[in-house]
Image (tube, rainbow, N blue to C red; front, side):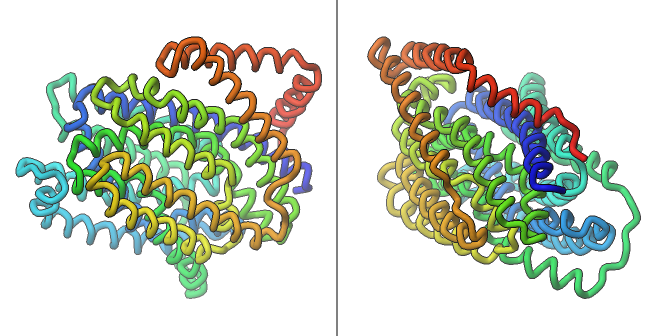
Length: 486
């Protein structure tokens, strides 16, 4: 592909990814609301604790194979038949070992984690679900790497997040408790794995020794960083549950849901852009890769920073959606919102590192962030509960992303940021800050003030659309999305 075609292709795929991410974020929020409303702070703390357990265990058992497939397959399109068994067999064995060990140790794990003798069955179900999550993750990585972006988006970013709250509501309506609610959370990934098998079915070939060496030399360093990335919030939930109780864990989980929901733009663009970056960097087309990175970073900041700025100012208003039990999460949410400005502000630096083959440098960044997070969590959570967990996670987020940005700059050999990006960032902060100030002055920092702010933002967007140059730029973007890619 030419440079112009790559940019057009990444723009079109990015729009598809953003659509899926919007659905994923919206229904992830719906799921959190359902859990918090139905089970309260204490019951939701137990449910989110076992979700944290299975998420962390599954991330470890994936061994980095999902990212390795996403890195390798765009560079070697005909190698799927050989690479699939290389990726799938080790992770299946590791997940089965962890599942059996976890089921056998369910009673002491439940006693330490949930402080409830009746939690043994819930912990057993969590460990039994680890192979399901692992196989689904790996197979869907193949779909993401080899099929059009829309295919992966429909299965992973639409079907799974929509099905989870629907099933959970259904189980509770039938009289089920936390156990059946968690079963409703596990079922959609199992169905997604079956869909993925149907999408990628084809002949499997015997791998060559070089396939194992090249694949796992990339995957194994990614295994640890993937576990850290996937469990960044859930580590805080588990530590908060163990050190401050299930109620504080429920509050922190509610706060974390908002913090992660703001990442939907970045997640959607990552889904679409990662294969393009892998192909460009594999061909040593670094200038074009840097241009794709800068474009996506601009989009991420424009669409994500206003959300996090409003979360910081109107934290209590946002948490009111979950009920009165969660009002104490306002300050933790404001702290995390500020940290997330750094996270989204550096763009897809982790994706650049991984798709350039620098999984070891990515591991260094994630380990540094995790170490700082854990140290601060152990020191702060016993005294400050959810606030301590939020501060600890924020320190880890900032450390990881700053270090990853330094490494990504070296990997690209091109500037990460441009003057245009800095000007747009300043404009976003100024416009959002002005709207928030008007809302606070008119109606305070509660729901009414938030409503006024959103009206001001909407009016500002309409005014911007009235400017001819703005309409012209949007028109070019829409045309580039609609235009067929050769």
